Length: 515
Image 1 (cartoon, rainbow, N blue to C red):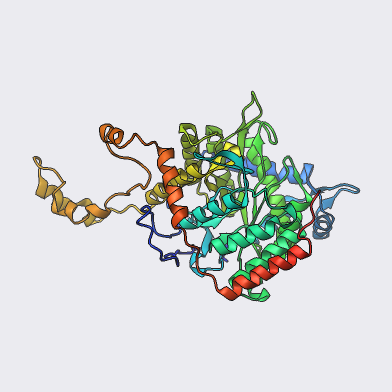
Image 2 (image 1 turned 135 degrees about the vertical axis):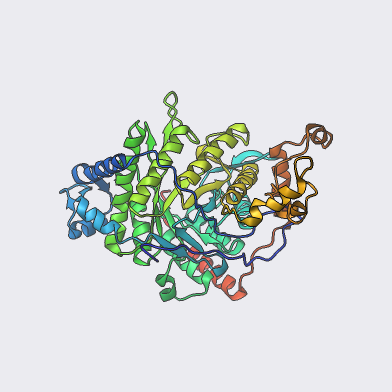
C-alpha cells in the first residue's frame, strides 16, 4: 500500500486457453487512463463542497445505527447525542483520519496472476451486480436462479476486460437466503479466479466470505490479514444514515485489513438535494463518515470513495442514469476523490428496459463519465439494465465490446519517427494511396482495433447475410462462450476443503434471515 506514488502493473492472464475461435479479445491487462480528468468545478467550488460536507458532519451529523460503532467514535472524540444514533465529528478529526488511508493498494485473489492495483491511473471493470432478474432474447425476462448466476459468472471470467467479480451478477432466488451466500461464494471461487466481492449482510455472511476466500487462496489467517484478498461495497441509507448491516460487515473487514468501497446512494431530487452540487456535498459527507470509522478501527484500512449520484425523473420518481446530470455528478465526484487522495468508484448504469439504442447511449454516457472523471473501479460494467433490476446476457456482450474499445482508446499515444511515417508519405506522394505502401504492409494486421461485435460490412452485404442486429449477434456469442467455457484450475484439495466448509455451515443453518 502507498499513500502516494505508483501504480500496480498488470501481467498476462494465467488462463492460457485460446479464445480466437470464439472472438478476438484484448489480453488481460490493467488499463491505465493517462488522460487529464475533466474538472467542471474550479478550486473555489471544490473547497465550497468540502466545507459544506464538513458542516454536515459537524453541525447536522450522521446516524450510526450500531452501538459499538458509536462507542468507538465517542472514544475517539466524536459527539454522540444521548439516547440517539446521531454522531457529529469535527473537520480536523475527519481530515486526520482520511490522511491515514492508502491512495493505492493491491488486491490478490486465489490466482495471483489476476491481482489488481486500485488507485492512481488504473481503471478496473466489473460485472453487473445484484439485480433480482435476468433476461435474454430466447427466454425473456425472469427471476434470477443459480444457473443464470453461474452463466453470468462464466461470462465475467471469460472476458479479459472484466477485472473483478462485483457482487452477484444476478440474485439466485432459487437458493434459500440462509445459505445463498455459501453456494454463491463457492461458485465465485471455483468458476472464476478473479478478485471477489462479498456482501456485508450480517456477521455470518461476511465471516464465511473471509474464510472461504482464505481457503481458496490456500493461505493462513495471518497471510490473509497481511494484505487485501477480497472486498466489499456498502451503501449509506441516504440521507445521512448508516444502518447496522452496512456498518457491521465493513467493521469486521477493517479489523482484518480488507478493502471497503463506500458508496452513498444519493439520487438527486429524492435522497439528496435536487441540485447536483448539493447531492455531491451530501455524498461526500456520508462517505467520509464511514471512512473515518474504518480508520478509527484500523488505521490504514484500504477504502474507496464511491459515487452513485444521479438524478430521478421528476415526473415519476424513477431513477435516471446515463444522463447529463450523471456525467457531471461523476466528474465532480472525481474532483472530490482527488481532493481527499482516495481511489474512486462509479458505475456503467442505464435505465433502458432492453438492449436497444437507449441502453447504448446511456451506457456510453456512463462509461464516458467514468473515463473523463478518472474512475478507478467501474461497477456494473457489463450487463446492467432497468436501473439495476435486470441483468441482460446480450447487454453483457455489448458492454464488453464497448469496454474493450475504451481500453484500446486508453493506449498511450506516441509520435516517434515510425509513427510520423514521413518515408511513407514521401513514397506515396500526391497521386498514390497508402494501401500498398511498405509502411502499411508492415503494420496493417495490428494497426487498428478489431471489434468482435460490430458489423462493418456495407448494407447490401449485411442484408444478404440475414440482416442480423447487434443484440442477435450478441445472443449467438454468449451461447458459444458458455458452450466452450472451461473453469480455471483449482487444486482438488482446496476444492474439497471449500465443499466441506459449505456443507458444515449449511448443517449449522447458515445465516439468520427475517423469515
